[in-house]
Image (tube, rainbow over all chains, first blue to last red; front, side, top):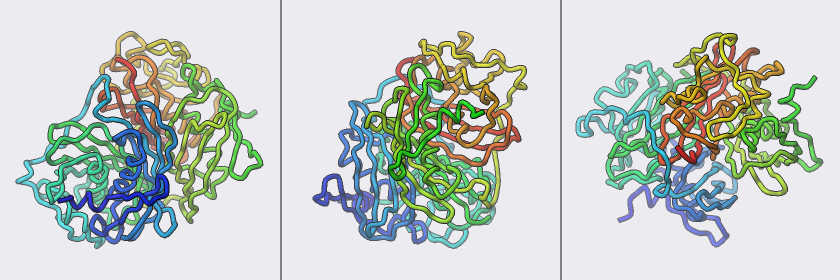
Length: 268
Length: 268
């Protein structure tokens, strides 16, 4: 059986070179809008289908407007192909209108070689069995989260504070993350994971939709099987604009992805 | 008198719509390669010349190969222009070969409105008069840094450790930053500032060139006059690939830019 996430991010050749067709479903949405990480996963599937290298190393998405669930096309541009790194771009279009642009560098994550020096560790979380599974119930401001019907996101008991009526005052959240159907993580799952937790600024009392303007994800290693741990933090909410940094750690305690996005807060 | 940095990042219309000519000089280089932030400043000057909005909000550059000092063209693509945000892309070409691609969102930094909540502070540095000005003398591995003949970069006495033969063991550096000719900071200066300090991983004993694959800069406010403070840190050197985060703070203590880049380390 193909996992939901693979079905819902699948791309098909259209017959035109480097142009792919996909269907954005309503199963990975926040409110009415498909999740930005989900859209990025679709775009990167198309990119990799045209890439000489197997893995995304760094991808940046600019979100122009949210598509509605339905058919989209992804036009891939092969910019350069080097021995160890390939450079590509992609345009996600709906009804002819460009909705997401992606710049990517691809390579082979399992073939990277060089020194390693890591400062940092996975977020400290109680065991998954003790944590509380997030539901599709409404976010502050009223948006429901269909995404959480497919993801297995588990917060420590009592967290995040806003879900219990008491925003914690620090824009930091962390959780276990997997798929409810048991699909194991890969780089596509990491693209979703970095954008899947509710905005960290909800812990500051912010409500409503926090649309992403730009999202960059660095893929740092292939994740091992098992639940991921995701830590998200915002340090600089300035005049309604905020960066959000995410780290994704795998079951072996390896950092597998890092992201930063720039988003707009509508109210506080 | 026009400041060196403005002369050396100037763009001129070519007569073709949204296509600009510029000259990459050898005055902002690290070794033989023009600094990535310098190239980004040229590209963003061209972008803004075609933008309905005055400021860059977020820009991502993918570096395909280092250009040599000499003429380049910047072709700008206007992707979308909204009321508060514009989306553009740019291709920096030399001899017809694309060397840098940029994705950008533009807006009006002085017109942003919404809640503010900042965690963090400028790096603690001794007063500039007590600090030691960086020279163009060689980096570990032997590269000279012509960039430092034009920038006024001042490190605390004894820092960074590698410059005194003792890498500090933590991939963190911070310094005052201005222009030697007294040019005041603006968003273009911030694009240079985020990539101007020697790589933080030199404090781990890394030597040689650390080429940038991707650089994203979030411009968060217009800087006030006076020296900037720049703090740079790397947490995850994994198999020779490293992220480097920079924060740029202005003389009033406001965060004005944040960046993250992904770079490759050649040796350790």
